[in-house]
Image (tube, rainbow, N blue to C red; front, side, top):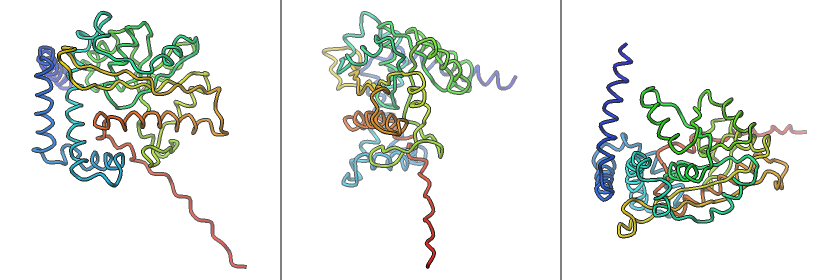
Length: 316
C-alpha cells in the first residue's frame, strides 16, 4: 500500500511538471536549460553531476590535446542538451506530426535507410545515447514504418504507462528491455523491424571494439540477431541544429543515415566483431561532429578487456 501511494505521488508530481513543460515556449525552455546546466555544472558539488566520469569520457573523445576549459565547456553544453531533450520529449506528440515534421527536420543521407526499410528484409535500426533519438523514431512512425522499440521499464508502473503511450503514439510497439526478448524475436520472425540502442557497456562477456580509440565492451546480441535473421543494420542519428526561430518556432533537427550494414557483404572470418565495430565506428563519426549531444555521463568504458597471462618459458 505504501508503495502504491508513493507511485501515485511521483506520478502526480511528474504530470504537474509535464503540464508546465507543455506550456513552455521554446525560447524560454532554452533559457531554462542553460540555467539548469549552469546550476548542476557550476554550483552543485561535482560528485552529484558525475563530473569525474563525464569529463574523463569527453577527454578520451577530444584527445589529450584538449584543454581543461574545452572539456568543461563540452560537459556543460551536454547538460544544456539533456535538459532541452527533456522538453522536446514532452512536446513531441503535440509538435511533431504529418503536417509539421518537414519544417522541423532536415534529412541527410536518409535514402539508403528508407530503401532498407522498403527492401522486404528485416531491419535493425540502431542509435546511441546521442542527439534526440526519439525524434527520429517519431518520424519513422509518421512515415508508416512501425518498429518494435526496446527500452528499459520504469520502476513506477504509472510512469511506465505514460512513457509507453508516448513512444507508441506514432505507431511503434514498446518492448521491455527485461523480459521482452521473446517479443522482439517474434517481431523479427514475422518480418518486422526493431529499434535498439547500441552503445551500452556489455560487461566482461561483450565483444571489445574500438570506440574513440579505446576498447569498449559491446553486446554481441545485435550482430547475432542480424546474422540469424539476415537483417540489415541501419545506424541513424537525430541531431539538434542551431536555433533559427525565424525559420521554425520549435527546435530543428537533422535526421541522418550514417551507415547501412548488410551481413551478406561481410569480408572477415569474425562477422560478429566486424558488424559490431562497423556500427560503433558509424556512431563515433556522428558524435565527433557534435560531441556535446552525447550522453557522456554513462560509463561507456566501464569494462576492460581481460589480460591474458603471459606464457611461461621454461629454460632448456
